[in-house]
Length: 590
Image (cartoon, rainbow, N blue to C red):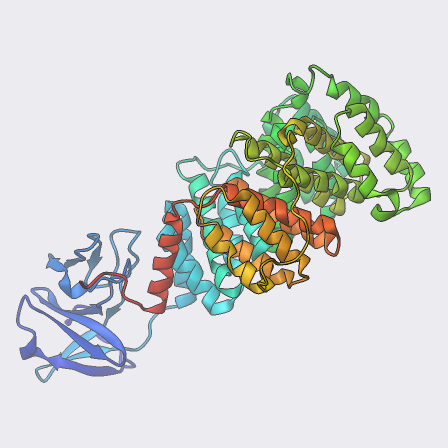
């Protein structure tokens, strides 16, 4: 700070140096109470700033001062010496210390200044707005170090992503929500890393997009939720994005319960077959999961951000693959006429998923007769299978497509099987939230995608046996080998076998889930891989204690192995942020 400014009386100054040690135009570094401070004697006065560049820690005393602007020589970040303010938003402000000259000595005030929490929040918003990964990383690490709670940065990312991307909800917000869902399964040191990846994904997904201007709810409170639901479905039918959005925000404003709003949304999302390749229902499910974390007060902007996808998504009844050589849409539409009656009969029977026979149903879903698949599913509903249990059986069948995926397939075919699995998981999670005849159509859609993927299992890869660890190695030692195995490309079958051995040994699954999370987060972000792992963990938590639970984790491990290793450039950025937060030197002295 300029030495000629008037200092408040409550400041406590400590002697830093003699003015004779700092000639005009010179600089000096001093260590005071753990602070390494750079002093500069300029024509405008004597100034003191933290010697550590806030960007990446380079010593600022090696920089250049001109016209009271200090330039760091590593990345050319520029700082106002008066305030420490940075002219480059990627660099952050450097701390400037008040200075006074007295009796030929230089005195510096080391008292803390400002609200550090507020500053971290502001910098996180800066990082997301400008798509600055290092800024996001430094902010998130500091915030979680302070509170250990990821909800605040998650909510900041959710609000930003729904307001500043005209196309609305997309891969970025889905990635963020997937990673938030995974946090309870991660090691403590990986939780900030998960938020880093999620928030960077939101920033990247929004970068260069115009903002989304939200529709206001209908005036007054005359329309009922039932009316709004009908209008929403009509507007989606004619691809009217704005009409659909106004219905959504109006439904929330009626004060309807979250479950009632979800029922409305899921009905509209399943009026058309496998809308937008399953993304519409998947994104809708994730939006409700995001609100579970962030709070229902964000429901209007979050749910309204889905409207464009509802209205503009591709409809599979218009696609060749769902019409030829077998008209799958006709088979489905005929089945849909019986759903309500099947549910009514099933409510009298009230059988669990085990009682209706998941093990008998799954092979039918994996078969090559679409009519037999539909008939078996309707029969299960009539026998008392709850829609959520039926959806779970379909999700397990979809996971088996990945578990049995042969590496002889085209690499891009992994994503075909992946889309079926994550859509089936979304339907399953939605059915656990809401049970309605309309949503049940989505279960049949999911089964149809599994049917369409049948040739991706020809020949089917053999499921690894659940026969325990080999070669006398303990389960923990085998698990420790997984990260190194995924340092090599296409270790698909080997990785699946390793996980099978670990699970067969009745070892702690928490350790396995944490290891899968770590191996996922060290890679460069891949939307589909993050989705796949998150869906598998959700399915595992429901199937735990059954062989099916092991198969789901084997499937996602194989998918992760197929997509590893990446360049891991994002891990380097995060590691730099972590080291800076610890106060380590990042620059190389040699």
